[in-house]
Image (cartoon, rainbow, N blue to C red; front, side, top):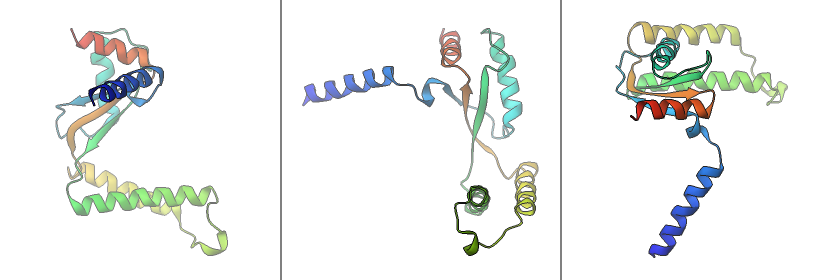
Length: 152
């Protein structure tokens, strides 16, 4: 019924206003070039650009997260393998497994191999952006100020 739908919508609005989540700190950027793959460069550029319109503290931007094009199955599989290596290394460091049952890995060597692979993807242009990134602020109020400044 319409009444039920309206009640659900009102609950959602009230719940969202009373609870903090990542959307309170982040903005989605769109229209970025596919060559935009360096998060630190993007973060620094945004800090400079936004500072022209909004008074920002030095560390107002917590970070950016670029959405990469993973449509190539081989590349996606290699990335998933690296992420699995990171997880397995962390699990071993935390003692998540019975030491007698695990095969000891040379994690420093594996980390170097994985890092070299990732750097090659960027250097060879294999890993590109889909043109979107999340911009994450240190304070929700800063995000709101930026939204207000760019909504005019």
